[in-house]
Image 1: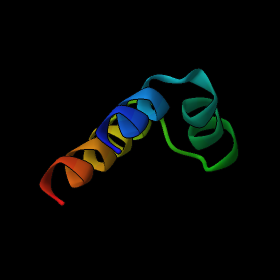
Image 2: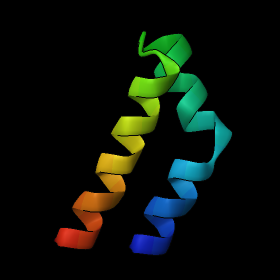
Image 3: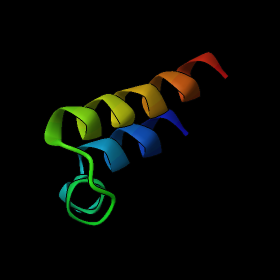
Image 4: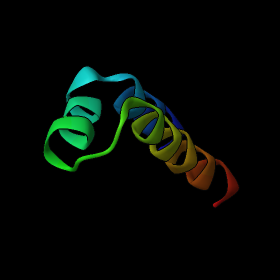
Length: 43
């Protein structure tokens, strides 16, 4: 699951969706992806 989370976080499509469709700025999108990966690590 960790590798999948990291791969997802590094993919351009989710970041683009968070910025363009969800209204986050680039820093917020990056922080959300980092938090998602940390959640998998601590689960």
